Image 1 (tube, rainbow, N blue to C red):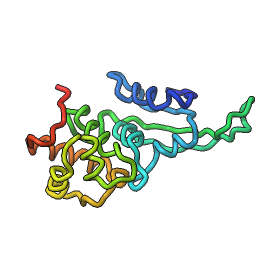
Image 2 (tube, helix red, strand yellow):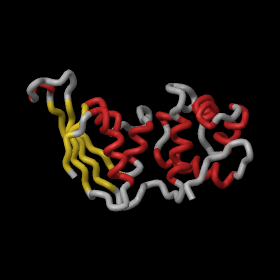
Image 3 (cartoon, rainbow, N blue to C red):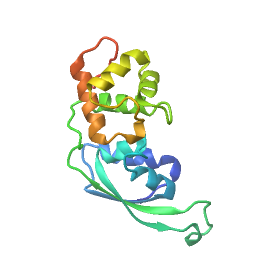
Length: 173
């Protein structure tokens, strides 16, 4: 798939193709430079968008295209992004919806430590979240942007196996 995506639909279009029953093997996209940086971010700078894309494929920043290369010139630079799509998500889970419920909750409060953001996003007391993080082997002082996709997957599986009444994630099936 090759496309030049407008900023306002970039994440929706990418996610649509990555979650489609028949996926492209490779996506080469021109997107806003800042969005490409978000998508290719590594732990420490991750976002919901980077987790959403990297769950399904390996994004690589191929190059940048300056605003002056277009007429009329936009206000921002663009980037060429290549996504090598995995045959299946890299986190083994039968519940993608539950996985994203947890990740979305983790990113619900920007720059907050995980107990605060998860408590806010899952609408449960922070005192219920703290021991779960510790039991799952995740330092409660960490922030959502520092977790790897594997850590998000492990935490989701831990919560599903925990069967706690206080913290529930919905199941897609």
